[in-house]
Image 1: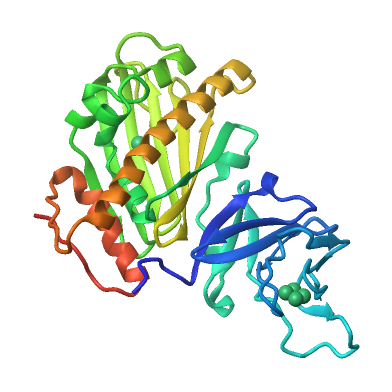
Image 2: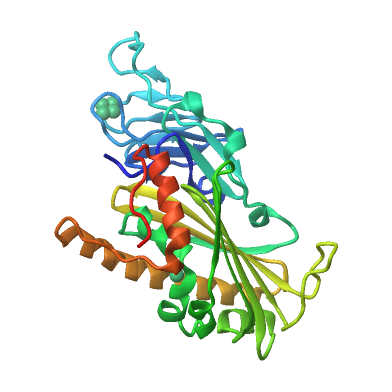
Length: 350
Ligand code: FES
Ligand SMILES: [Fe+2]
């Protein structure tokens, strides 16, 4: 049985990736064709011609106004997936229709609903407003991962790995040494993991971007909404500087690190990442630095997870992992994902 929850919203792309030309991406094993219509809306339909399966993203298939013409024999489809013309006959078969996917553009992302369209409710899309907000400056990208999406969820839910895998970038000894607090909001479908370091070394990622020197307070508050959206609320401040009683926090630096975890197939993943900051908003040097640093960090994870995928693929069945306190967030996430995928409860904590 698939571990990928269907009947879910997934990030398919950044809005900037989709223009008035054909764009394809595989989401949850389904090849989907996107383009932006002349009215500006993003359309998403199956990337397989109903005639002989030729990919509609593949030249010489082409977009003519708001219709896509198959490059093999010329079946022509509208933005809603309906076939409007076939070669050699005037009658278009009633069943000639591409599967069409609900799409919503929100917070710089293009979200697509995989599964039963009747169950698509745009109000359930989790939000990441900073990515598209004038009070923040954002750098972002996407790295392909040759590993199942659950490995990326495990990775992001347990940031103790920063100390080891990302030393010299975002890792310092305090991350692995500081215990976490995990809570699960079953009703909202969110896993929270918090790690508050009140006296920590400042890693280069934050030292160079905030220009804070010496020790810092570093708070990491994770909010994961399975399956797709992961948010790390990162708060950096001089030691002893706390948010005000009114909720204001003018002397701290806030970085919203957002990941969209989208399965490409059972064994590969689109790793969308974004870093939004509320300081140095117009400083291109800071943007370039955070862009390069975060991409490097993501690629360190990608390298490790690609190895893990290959290890898992070749090991005998029945390997037993050992879980400890740092894994409570990851295990909670696994349980929620399994429930969403209709598999019941899997691994328990040792
Ligand atoms: S495969 Fe598309 S028209 Fe034949
Ligand atoms: Fe990482």
